[in-house]
Length: 213
Image (cartoon, rainbow, N blue to C red; front, side, top):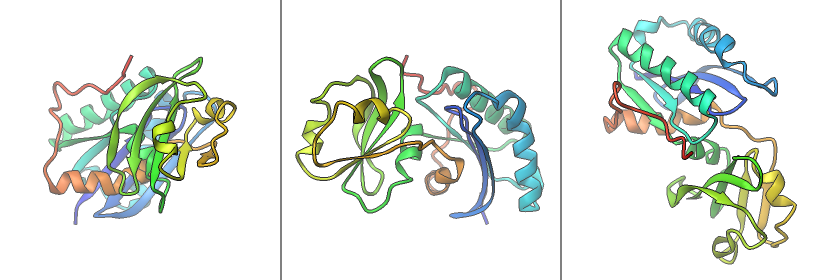
């Protein structure tokens, strides 16, 4: 049975999970409104291993949030994942941060996760109900006409820490906003398992997260 350690540190939420196939075995998450990853991440990894009652050598792969997101957060998560992969001789899997966030929404035609990029800018992409990316990840400056192409087609759910500023200027009746949503390691599980089955691995030496900026 495939066991994967999932690490999500792209924002202020520090989140770790262990999966077996498509099932969650254990998770640990913390959001103190500031970055605590340097102090918490390795502690959380040890805790979820204990909770799942498995040794680190039983892991089959390490999955990490691949960006976009905070430069500091992504660097900590990716460097930790790379170190574990080197030490354990395990493959590295990277999942788009926006796909992880979009996975919190089910049964909706269009999903647009947003990560705050300061001022009126966000990192965003558009996903369908199967979490396939149908508009590429980009840094986007918001105005009242943003995403009208998708809003004209039906209900669109916006979520993430970037939605607050868009909800203030978007009045379209098809727009629905989910606030206080952060990427979670447990939402990486189906994507990580699918990539593992397809042997869609990253080059451990050369992989870099997608910072966008």
